[in-house]
Length: 332
Length: 256
Image 1 (cartoon, rainbow over the protein chains, first blue to last red):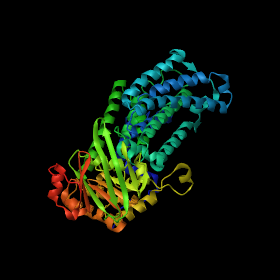
Image 2: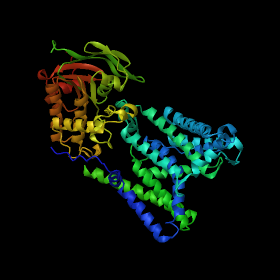
Image 3: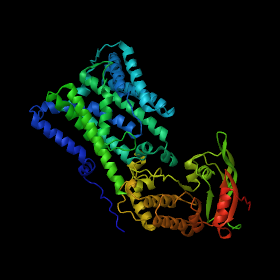
């Protein structure tokens, strides 16, 4: 009996290509199109901007993609960014936390923990109490945003901690931010976790079919809860990176962030029903959104045109996904 | 039959849902190396009964004995530890995962190295090897074992779930409607697989089925459930399909 078992992919690129043909095609088209349409695209400045924005959006997207993978959604991540940014500014205005790298790290940990606590509030209502996560995170989106405003009103607070500012402003060779490396590592960790560890693999299972997962002893509720916590922590991290780049914290940061945070996983192949998604697709989707965002600004497109285009890309990808699903069903 | 070993025994098992008694004071014995069918009309309580044995439901009253020792089965893991493997009616497969992942669902093999010990990395190579061995052993034909199981035919999927119970089953296997939704050829293959479980592996098997033709082809003993109670037990060779049907529908009630 012959089994056409795929040979173990020694080259990561082979894996990338095989799973993401459509996305890579789209990305190529976008890049080529932009390259031909404007001479400001293929410049160091444009690439630099893409890389700068990529970390902050990417970190956020990773967190939300985990929640989506387990069959839920987190609309409150933008508000968590708001809380974490004003909180960062407040914490680092205290001399103790700006004393040296270690105390700065300590301050950062506090903000991350707060992010985790906010995430677990989502988990409490959406998982432990079983309320629909759209409704829960819609509510916490408003609540957390309000919370962010309670600290200093609507005021912006500047951050002067030099160690903190170094995070967002260290560059390798003047173009590549150091945070991009952190993003790569995070993606790698996520990939390894979800695909190779016993606990991580269960995220897909918990999102795909709760009943079957339960029958096989998988602690579905724990997994879904943890996904919300991770989303909260990564949203806080995203806020920290953002503030480090800007040099200030304000409660209104991250106002529209949840939109991108959801578009990127969906484009990257994550199903909103849960149980489906691949990390390499997520990465490519992130690049697509970044290229798109900067590209059409450079083209001089109006805000509305850009919004519409973003929606068109989303629909196109969803349509391809549906067609592919249909083809698979016909195979049987 | 009576001097054979009792592998599983349930005494006085009951389950209510709200005001309805789904299972009412049921006693049942399962002997070594036999296949027992539980039959009954829709709503008789067949699925509820086996779900209590397999840990999906918690029993309200009654006791369960494995090899004459009482056991507590409070969740699916307890049942598995007791050596009970169950194949449910709605497949119990995760459609987007491959065969090996489904075979080892919840029981993945951890790598023997540092990665495994610290981070619980799964041993993909081992699981794939074992899957190929299992499929070969039962002559289950699957061309691409890396494919998602939703691309397999109903018969192949059924073979995977039954094969899974063989792989992990230590003593007792429960199958809920194993031949539903299958073509004729695939039904025959599944029945053969189940017989192999008893004949080659000495397992004790409980089968729930609506299909009396299959029941009579497969089992040693038939238990009839009606309204949550066992209203009769017959040895297959000493009864007829007609008699079983009348017991199911309630025209005749026989205590034996």
